[in-house]
Length: 156
Length: 183
Image (cartoon, rainbow over all chains, first blue to last red; front, side, top):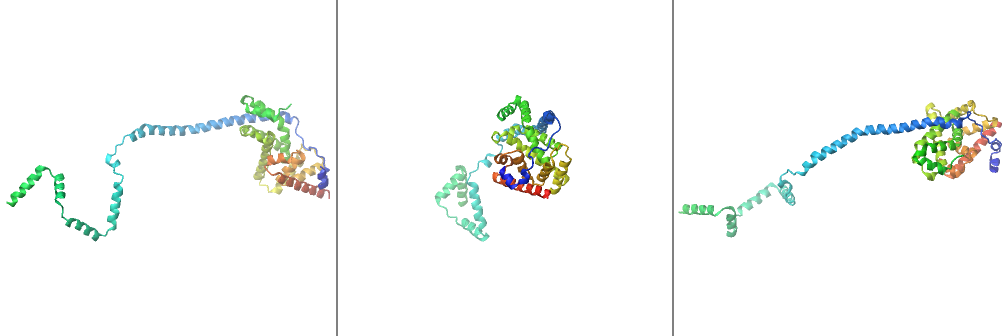
């Protein structure tokens, strides 16, 4: 206070009382005037909540129906695997090998590829064991007998 | 006989006692909050509106009240914010620049049937009106409500140092204003 007198003598000379007043019984009646506002606010709050739930209900219903349809129809169907076994149960490395092969072929020029194929065809020297193996897996005994009989008749 | 803040808070948290506890809270703090608001908005009808809005806001946000901030500090903060919102909305609505807003407040003061101050008190009120918003708040809270800087710091979310500086500037400006008028 002494500080105030030093720095602001004019201000410190002003009477510090409250110059304002209020209408009679203002504070006594204040709560009675406030109460209806509080109830309105409470009702509004409830109303807002009800409206929100009312808006949300159809959306929730739709979401529940879609989930139900999914569970009843799609999910049991997905349990039965109708695709061919071969499509799903291929040898894992197979595709990889094919890819590597196709990359190799793509990189070769036409002349080199044909030369390679020609070499394979011309190279017709097979050992007896390889021939017997091939014949025994590709023909049965009756066919072999008929073929050898035909050959003998032709030689005669 | 007013209940203690602790009793009031306990009552506000108990569902069936809430209405009664809230009435107790209003009766305990209405006067102090009213005068704080009145010093910001000046006009009685405006202060009445703002006070009602303040308590409606308190009622709506009872669940958000954190006990560590202190009930009075919390109420004071809401009242301050509501008063400033009111002044700013008035400014926006009437597109007042800052100087015209203080003219509007001076007019309010001069036309106020509920102002009983003498000439020098009126001059002081006019001097306060010319202060920037923050300085006006700080001056009123310190000079009239005798709030401590620490309490003000919690209410206005400003450091004690900044509040001291604001008060000092406000006092200087008011002294200057009063001296000019006398000359």
